[in-house]
Length: 179
Ligand SMILES: CC(C)(COP(=O)(O)OP(=O)(O)OC[C@H]1O[C@@H](n2cnc3c(N)ncnc32)[C@H](O)[C@@H]1OP(=O)(O)O)[C@@H](O)C(=O)NCCC(=O)NCCS
Image (cartoon, rainbow, N blue to C red; front, side, top):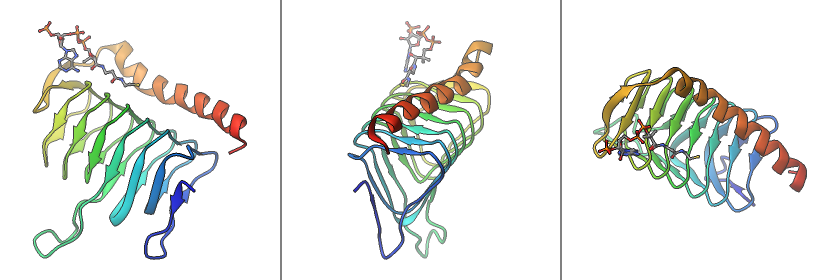
């Protein structure tokens, strides 16, 4: 069972999602229509909430987690991911907020309180430090993440195309497994 309850709260899935059976989705996690969760993803909505939008893909080995509320930090850090987002293999997204049409390159790390605006490309292996905002329309790379250059027209188009590609791919997988 990929989806499990925590304190009686179960993950909520939209229409036509694909959840690989080797992934672990726990607690207060909401996943929008046509999104996909690939092998060995861990999404743990225990001490705060995880929200994933529509047509978003979370690829193999990625970890999604959150930070608890405390006296010093009354809201803690929830994790919110928008629509048409591609999260590459083996990323770590912790207590951050992502808008729409974003590509998170393989192995990237995005930390608590960071905000990624719409239409951003994050290069493989990038580290986005706590509370940093990545501005719409740019490529970011490096540790710590630096603005590399504005996105080219074809790169902006690819942000949406990548999400479409993954919707088609998960439809194949759903047919294969009768998911
Ligand atoms: C960053 C990226 C988009 C390439 O951008 P680009 O502008 O075409 O970069 P180039 O290949 O022309 O390289 C330009 C410089 O950036 C460096 N570079 C490339 N990718 C980098 C990365 N992820 N982090 C840091 N530096 C990077 C190159 O080594 C090169 O350095 P140099 O000028 O000192 O030689 C690409 O390498 C990348 O990281 N894509 C993410 C792919 C991915 O993870 N997809 C999800 C999986 S499904």
